[in-house]
Length: 223
Image (cartoon, rainbow, N blue to C red; front, side):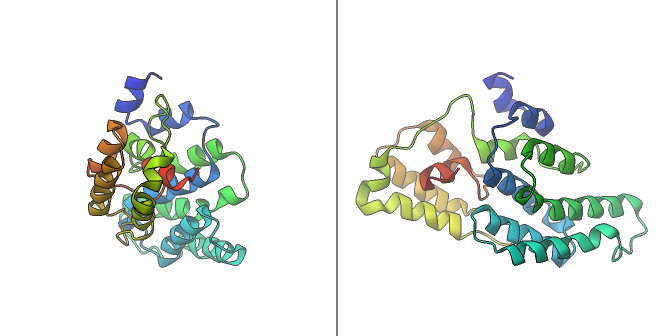
């Protein structure tokens, strides 16, 4: 895959294959959670929704083993179809598949093969978000960037504080980052001396941003 293909590709399976071995467990957790947040209306069961919330906490090491176990149990229930009372077989399938992903999004805790995990449990979800979501989480692997410590220390660390606030204070239940906060962050970065268009354009570009956003993660020092 070339850089031009990466930037235009919407075939997430092809992109995952290209990224083989480059995921961290945290990034894999948040990629799956962001995808499920974008399909939130299909997570009709509160147990599946709870599994996503716990997985987001687990990504940052903030979920206990008991919470992870309980979330897996609650999310697993609708995958057996016991509370699906639908005449539309296609709708039944959509709900089953999405609840199934919510259950398995916790399993990277026990499964080191992230490439297999992602492809195995996302492959049947026809409505899964395209390549834009992978680019949101991983950015452009052909053009890796570094963050200047001067940006983070400028004006008594305001850039870091704005970044942490954008990460913490999301719009729920969509789980998206607040674009107004990202615009303010972009302005602060520019004042701090950042001239990188890739960073500034990503923050100012609108659209949906989630925890795991590559710019936010770089500024917070998260992998």
